[in-house]
Length: 352
Image (cartoon, rainbow, N blue to C red; front, side, top):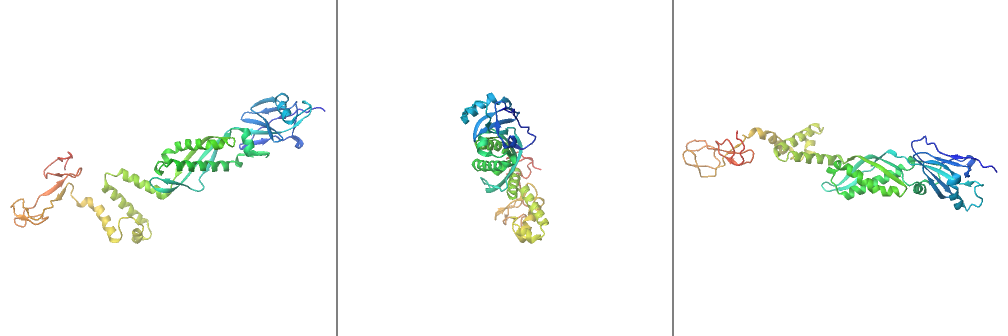
């Protein structure tokens, strides 16, 4: 019987096929010693005989009579040399990188923040992978299908990514404030943690990108408030005015009016008390003369002009009518200074 010549090859014109089984004619799977194998770049060919992997071939051109038949003959206990064809399955596995696989948190990840307690974190990004060990991949995931696409496995891989991300967030104990500044570190940690799991199924993660990590709106507002306090920590009066202005803005945008403003939990009081406090906050810089306050006289203190005893906290002497001196305080350090001084004797700040 004349043996036919067969060239086994696969021209990949797709973007998402991981495994392709070579289609033998008329459902036959027979190769002989005249057959050849062509494996292109970014491919490997796996020969399977009776469910057992015979060999894996990288890119190149092979004469099956010398390259594969000795192995198949041993597996099949073949007794007739190269004269009789052998039944095999040939799988081509794509070893190129599959990039831009998008991932995202369907449900938020719970993490324990050292400053805000339990919070929900969301994230999204992309990753890339390739087949690392064709034999392992064929055994663990592919089975006996005629083809295997990236869509058949990406859902499972995304679940692995999110699981590792949740583990890293839990183990790091990092604050939500520091998340955005540490995405590169998270990339590397999650990638290293997930690599072992990928290789268990014959794959390799070649890159991972965490594009964004976000927290709930209320946590973002708390972070913004803390940042504002940090910037204005040395100017409590300015911070109070800004808070009051924001409270009034919120009240103006609230269709419930003043009653809703009080009920919104602004934290500055309620009703008339809150209105008075807001008025005092904005009026305070205009009512006080900078650097000076009336002297707080104790009862029986002597008049600066006639020496007669003065009632407590009096601004004028009831005997001679002389105005009592006004105490001045440094606006920089708060130290009491001489009424005629031009510089603070305590810190050197210019008075004027």
